[in-house]
Length: 143
Image 1 (tube, rainbow, N blue to C red):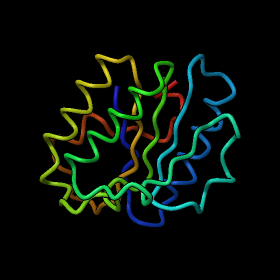
Image 2 (cartoon, rainbow, N blue to C red):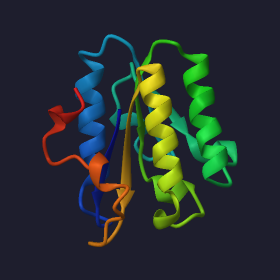
Image 3 (cartoon, one colour):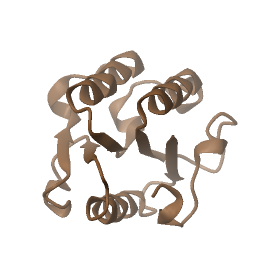
């Protein structure tokens, strides 16, 4: 399953993701990883959650990002939740060109029993492929 927290820059997406991750950290059966583009929020997460600073791994596009995600899952068979904050900060592509990536992530997450939660900044115009993944204000939508 993949879920997306979508909104304008500064709308509280990161704060919401941190709260969701910390809440799940207290009750998840498997492990949790949180990917960000810097170390700004590393200390806001419960210490049981693996923090990954993606800027250290030279991800140059959506293909590399998908491989990166698969590598993280391959090294941790207990991975249950994977949070990715600021997806579009990691990728040079435009959101409207990433339909294939969301489809690939959905297939991968279902095959591996992994919940992937991504935050995506954007305006009011939401691509059709993204709409089924967007969750509302209810954090229990992923638990």
